[in-house]
Image: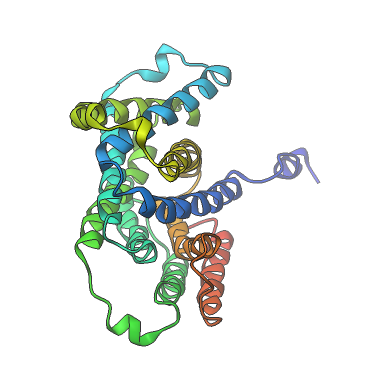
Length: 306
């Protein structure tokens, strides 16, 4: 066997596999923001809450970037890229919290599962990425599993499903999220994930502070309930700083449709979060849906040339 043949083995995991692992962690962390976000959405205005969130996450990511790859001037050429991406992702987060004012966390997760198909469309428009038949099959299986989980294995509940105002608002946010994924790949010019994420966070923070400065001043931050601070720290560190890096990392290694396919796992993770928060166990048949999402992800892991 030649040295060339041994190269992939010496390198450990392939980049595509690392991207899949990053998105697995991403889906678990994102799910927590639904359950915790629903608990705090009515305590602080969404724009003000997310302004603080972006600032805290930016400080963490900025420090990590400075220690790691370094913050070099050449990394911030064409700053309009960061302004555009920061605005798009800030839009998603603000609309998510507006939606969670009235939407149930699991119902919101149902809306979130619409992003893979939309991301696939944007991926074709921006990058001419093609969804192969095998990927399409995986997306359909994952979608079926997600819907089974969303409606808790209750077909009557599925038939009665009605879209509320919160879900409609959040759907608009999900369109922004689906657009963001291929945009990262198109606009990144080789900047390290930490540095690129820092630029996006700074741009998003500036936009949100400008939008919500009155609410930021009017909010009694010292008088907020402890759960608000717990939720704010979680969404800042875990559901912002960590997931931003994971998403940037994955989008540079996987097609957009594959990246967003991991949203099919979010409803399953949300149910686990709800259980942990004392909301009770779902019916046993729920795990049929979880199995389907695992099958879908297995198909995606095997389809590395799509």
